[in-house]
Structures are given as structure tokens and as C-alpha cells.
Length: 304
Image 1: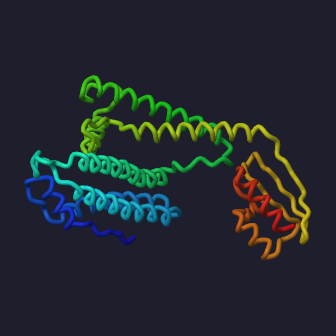
Image 2: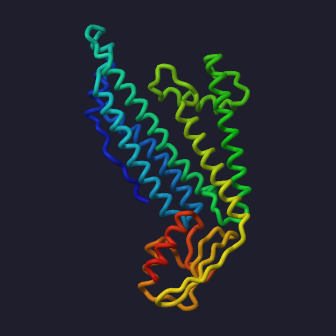
Image 3: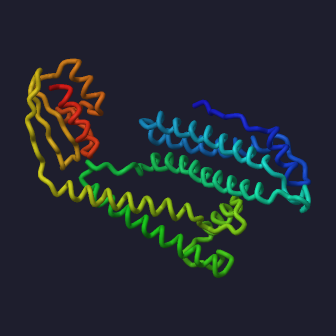
């Protein structure tokens, strides 16, 4: 698969270096660093596509997206660096302190986006090892969600404990809940931070993980509630032909069943409202959610 690279603002990178350091910029170094990270993602994509050829299109879509988003992040970093020179270069006299504060805030924001981009290779890795999204129709979806929730909660507590240890000792050495390689990974991650006092896990790490905990807990509660309900069937009259609507809580699908094959116009209405033909069920269906019920109302209105 051809690898896609995007242009890095080398001229801006050189100027930014001159505004923050007395050492010379090594021509092409930002592009080289960018390509090194992109190649690492594509190497992973190649392995994943070989292991899961049926997912190859999606895998390489993610790799291309990573390359583009990372280039945007690099160029944004360069743009931010050009906004205000270092005090080492200008000296303390009349130094634009407020401007520097805004620059640091922009750096931190871009750094958070960088971490979001780094989730893309992790997605590819999950595809490779079969760690796909939990589907509500899975027979053991509740058990999977319970395990996921427990893992997220454990991760949240671990991040808090590691931050507390670092806050107290100013080092990660000796932290008994971390393996040596994890210590090195966190130390390297902290070097990327533009914060005056970086932490092993920044506030956004904890906030994002907590958001996942809350969304997983809500989904688990909703799924338990729905699964506890019986399947329901309703016959709907329409101009063309009657059809049956089934809320299949076993499969977590909202299904529409016709006695005969619906005409093209009806099929287009179904498709435009998110319903897909499932030969195994002999039904038009979509995941059983509040949005699906709303779409069903639109289908009924259009067919009646």
C-alpha cells in the first residue's frame, strides 16, 4: 500500500528554532521526525492488514488519517512557536509576558491534540488483535461492558496513584505499580509536555478516561434495562402493504418485516433512515436505540 506523507513547514521550523535557541536548525529534521512516526504507523497497518485482510481498507484509511492529522499537528506546533520568541533570545527587557502565556496555552492545547492523534495507531492495534467495539447484539455484551468498566475504573485509580507518587517523590523510580518499561514510557511522554511542571498523567488523561467510565456505565445500565424487556411486535398498516415492526431485545435490533419484497421507493425510504437488509433475519433492521425508534416514526410517516 502506498504511504501518504504531507508537507511539513521546514522554513517555519527553521525560523522557530532561531526564535528559541542559539543552536542551528538541522535542515529537514522536522520532516524526518514526522515521517519516522508515520512509518511506524504504516508498519503497524501492514501487520494488521496481513492479519486481518478483511479489514485492510479500514486499517489503511486510519493510517492515512494519522499521517494527515500528525502533519497538521506538527505544522500547528511550528506556527505556535513563531508567535513569540524565547526570553533567552530577546532578553528580559520589555518581554511580552502576556503573549508568551497565550503561546504556552496554545502549545498545551496542541499537545493534547497530539495525544488524541496517537489514539489512531491504538485503534489499528485493536483491529489487529480483534479488540473491536462491543456490539449491543452480542450475546455476552453485558459481560464485556462490565469487564470494560472495571478496567477503566482500575486505570483511573492507577493514574491517580501514579500522579500522587510523582507529586510526593518527584520521580517515578520505585513506584511499585509500574513496570520498568512503563516508567520509561511515562518519562518520555513527559518530555513532550510544554507545561512548567509536567505530570505522568495530565488532567485531560483523567478527564477523558472518566468520560469513558461514565459513558460505559450509562450504556451498561441502558442495555441491562433493554435486555430485561420482552421482544415486542407491532403491525403497521400502509398504503402499499402492511409490515411488522419487531423490537428484538435479544439481538438489540429494531426490525421491519414485509410479507413480500418491498418496491424500490420503499427500499430507498428504509435505507435513507438507516435500515439495512439482513438476509439472516429476513428483515430490514438497525441497532435498537432511541434514534432508531425516531427513524422508525419517519419511515411510518413516509410509507403511510
